[in-house]
Image (cartoon, rainbow, N blue to C red; front, top):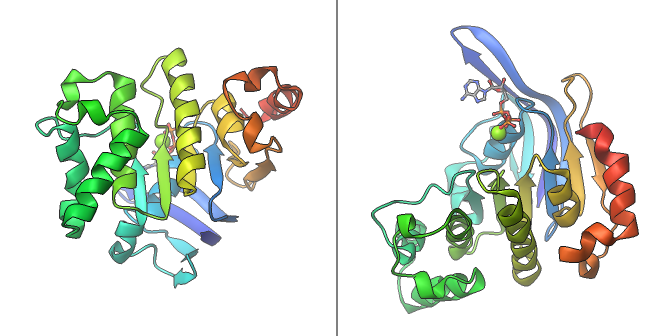
Length: 252
Ligand SMILES: Nc1ncnc2c1ncn2[C@@H]1O[C@H](COP(=O)(O)OP(=O)(O)OP(=O)(O)O)[C@@H](O)[C@H]1O
Ligand SMILES: [Mg+2]
């Protein structure tokens, strides 16, 4: 899906250089659930925005679905990439259905097929009965589910999520992580999720990229070798889960 080579991102604030991430190379496979972890300020959001195309890298190359970009992802790829925000970022005056229509309007996707797609996505996230509700009538977890339905509705190839559960309480976020996992299994799309929670990373991620606090130390990518069918609410009792949880504690 992605092949990232020697990617760097720097910002300039009043001529002061801030390095978000430096010279990183890795790939993300098709249909993979890929997680990104690391300390605050290490560049996770900057990396995700660069994978989306709303930030341009300072150096390096991104190959997206075989298309090579030396100056970041161009806007022509936006329709192929879905983004789920940390705070659901819905339009407050539009209904749930109206919020899902927004990307379709932007990309000029019209007709019965797309209206059916809206209904299908709302059913997938369990919110079809709420299609006429407005965001403030929904709970935090429901709004995040609208966020994922909106990212999926235009049928992109990859879904990028920046700490999608961080505004929620521990119980809701665990439930929602399990739901996102089952949505990933059903949709067979590529999911990339930034998280600050090791449990979520092991539950969802087939591979996890850990940023170091030291920008000169390359991120490490760890395989989470737990089969798909064992990834559910009971994963905490899984022997391999417990081993990984203690082994990976060193990174967080
Ligand atoms: N738009 C911006 N302009 C200038 N500097 C920025 C901008 N966005 C991020 N930075 C800087 O880049 C660095 C990485 O920020 P980033 O938001 O990517 O971190 P993060 O890993 O997502 O952190 P968190 O876990 O707190 O969300 C920080 O030093 C931050 O101050
Ligand atoms: Mg961030």
